[in-house]
Amino acid sequence: MVVDVWMPLLVPLLAVPLVRLLADRLSPRSASWLLAATGVLLSGCTALALLLLTGAGLLRVPFVAAAEHLSPVLLRRMSPVPVPLACAASAALAVTIILAIWTLHRRRAALMLARNASRSRRGGLAVLRDELPDAYAVPGRPGTVVVTTGMLRALDARERDVLLAHERAHLAGRHHWFTLTMDVATVLHPALAALHGPLRYHLERWADESAADAVGDRRVVARAIARAALARSRAGSPVSAPGPVLSAISGPVPRRVAALLAAPAPRRSRLLPGMATALAACLAMSGAGALDAATDLHGSLEAMEIHHRPEAGDPHRAGHRHARHDRIEARWADPGIQGVAGAVDHSVT
Image 1 (cartoon, rainbow, N blue to C red):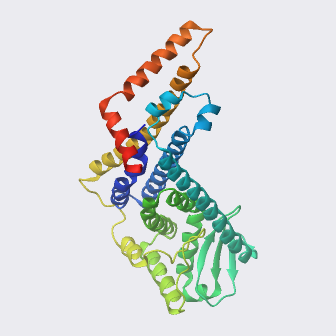
Image 2 (image 1 turned 90 degrees about the horizontal axis):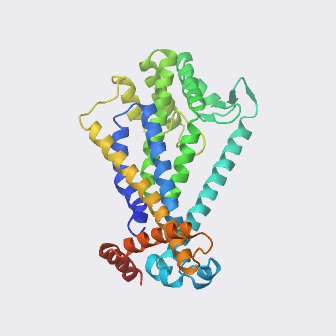
Image 3 (image 1 turned 30 degrees about the vertical axis):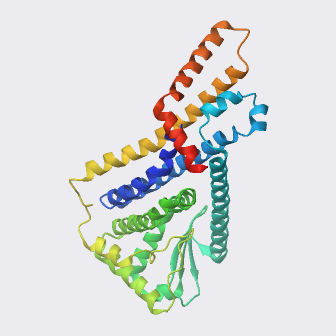
């Protein structure tokens, strides 16, 4: 557990640059799924690592060990997590939980505000009497596309069709769940914040491609997005900060327009298989480290219980569990593990 538990905390520093490079070489749909799945896996392993550090450190507290009938002798040998480090991990875990709840509350409040503004809808479309050019998709059951009269006047008929097709693609693809998972993942591990912008970009590109398929003309889609963003810019009001709603005029618009005017096929690279393999290895290391650390902690708890309260009624079971106890003791007797544990204790104290 000494080494394994640190893997989920350190691997994201390497995995984040890899997944960004890989996503840029995939189609928008595949890139969005890859970014969201990577964020969920890495943040989940991070949360598990913090939980294991907290639990392993709490076992060193005397009244906790006494309540669980654990051997004090083996606790000093088999629980390498000092109490101060466990306190730091528990504080970090508590902060991330509070921030995650606050993030969900803030998104829900913003979503309710957007829904209240779009109550007067007809057929999934709500037109707001507002001179500020704006358009966005409000998720729900059913979802609603909101567009202002200022935006409708800024576009011609075909460009309006593009705008509506773009926002409906956000609703059909349930893109708000992608942004929600990434918001929570960013709270759990700060390194994942670097994936938030790329995910937003690829979601907008996904909707751009869906709109291009719907209207059958990529140039019209590019022109509609550019004119919508230009109309908003001329109004003197910047695009609102990212939230639970997605808008056709958000994100790097010049980059999206350039992608629409270029060939629709995603870029290929000879490095693609190597980057995919490296990313898969990082994710496997993070997951395996968290699972192995959890297995080690569980085995250590069983060994400590045996040492303090051996089995009396079942000799076969007792022999089996004592054999497992001997294997765990032998593992912790390894000089390399003891050296790492000593280094951890020294660095914390």
